[in-house]
Amino acid sequence: MQVSSVTTQMASAKLTARPSAAERPTAAGQNGHEAGVNGAPAGAPTAATTEPEIVDPFCNADNPQIITFQDVTSAAFKIRKGVELTPCVKSHFSDLIDMDIYLKKEFLQFTGSFKERGARYALLMLSDEQKKTGVISASLGNHAQGLSYHGWKLGIPVTVVMPLKASLMKIQKCRNYHANVVVQGADMGEAKRIALKMAHDRGLTYINGYDHPHIMSGQGTIGLEIVEQVSDIDAVVVPVGGGGLIAGVATAIKNLSPNTKIIGVESEKCPSFTRALENKSPVFVANQETLADGLAVPQVGYNAYATTVPLLDKMIVVKEEWIALAILRLVELEKCVVEGAGAAGLAAILAGHLDEFIGKRVVLLICGGNIDTTMFGKCLERGMAAEGRLQRFTVTVSDGPGGVAKLCNLLASLGVSIKDIMHERAFIRDIHHVEVKVICETRDWEHSKEMRRVLQETYSKVHFYDMPMAITE
Image (cartoon, rainbow, N blue to C red; front, top):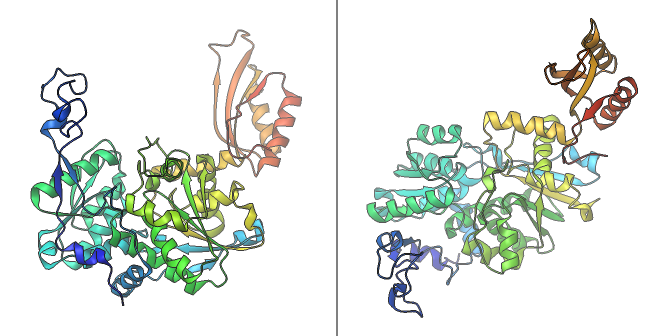
């Protein structure tokens, strides 16, 4: 078997410090100080000059490393005894959507996500010295858990830097796996800078969670399993964050099944790969808060981008409402509790982005199930609202005896369940009436429309709050 050049570089690679942008020579003069830096007087010291940038030698914009099929097969051989062979089963959605849908259930890995594959392979490929000293990485949660768990099992010290907004559940799980957990940084970008500096100062090996060649190769083993488990695949739909997962999966599948389409999906709140395609190279994209926190990577990896682009057939951006609805549907129909990233593929189908595959065979990669309990509840409610099953309205009723009771009885007669109700008198001009605010649950959108019609026929003042949800008519 061919050994990738990436492997031979691993033992000798070191994190290095390079001059910051302020220190590098410019046309204006040496170090850019003649014109001043960031508005400071010429020659004035800046944070940039005192804190040189630490670079990861395996993630170089000028020399991206493209993984090969041999890298993926090597990873498959080495990690086979340490990770689960997850099922890829036909979905209940197949009959509902008129599409032959299969679910690759990577959320059934021990730590709840596909990240274990790349983490274990990267750890196994360390030199003896690197294994003894330990590794470090920055992660919102899934990569941190995979690295922590397999580091513990392999006896390799692991430090993970997790940003302040990381899920408390994921932070605690990393501690349960005996990792040294550092919670610092406002976002992933800042957490990564902190981790790189710690790696440089302490001699630790930094393992990028989505752009390290061994990480991508390990994730690619999913593609090998999919092709073995499902025949005649028309398309594989892969959630995209930093790009490591789709890079590995695409490398495996395109080598074994060249006619299979590779479809990437990301949230509208963090469309990093889409912007990279538009820019023709990875570019920083300010992410917004998203249900799919596992996809919230502000810039895709250089190696992942270079590997994926020649193999990618389509990139899709989905709205958050569709992700919430997909989470709800997976719970109700498949009994699968998944995080937003894991539901992204189904969200793309529900939103109508893959209608060209009607009547064809499609595999959805359900990449993770580590959803925070509080977030899970929010997603279910938002999904119900997106589907028209959760309604909110205000109606003015009589403030006399039985006024509110009449409203409740009317809703009950329609089979509508009241989830929350409150009334307001102080801000109503007519002292004989009261404004009632109601949140209620219906069976579906048709049931909601029936309720709206009856309320409008019964009351002269009724207002429905129409939010920009996924389904309206």
